[in-house]
Length: 112
Length: 112
Image (cartoon, rainbow over all chains, first blue to last red; front, top):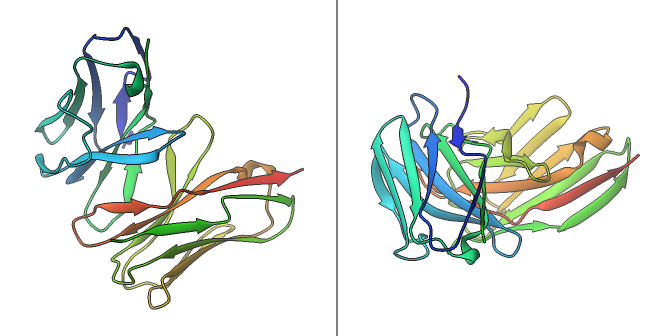
């Protein structure tokens, strides 16, 4: 398996623009997680899905953030409109219950 | 509320030494525990997963132990090498729903 695949690896965008981050989990995994990492706040769980259904989105910072998982092999995290304080590395991870997490390589987002 | 603590926050040791990284958690009713490493600017790589019925796991020069009753896990690294320099993160699974709580990590530097 190729692991958890995230795209793009890097994204630079202007304030106010819409940003879409993508994630392909490992086939057969039933959980998918979106995290954000900054120096100041460390790793923060934004939202997670079980069998494509959002379970907990309490970590989503505000209404500008939304996430979808239309099928078992694809998820998106969208920020609209983006702001400079959204600059961070965004990680996607997937797991099969009880067997631990696998993380993607992350998307480094810079909003200028 | 579960809290995961990793002490020390940073550690420097000469190459070749054996070392122990510590992880403690406030609620002993955890399910699994997973150790990760993160290299600067990179994603998280899974090192070891200790499942609920296990007390330790070994992979090469790494050994992780888990004592739920005392709320502690240790990661033992034998014969440290400069390539072991990274941040090591401990994460506990609170229940079977696969949501995990991360510690803030120990930044390890192996001196050549």
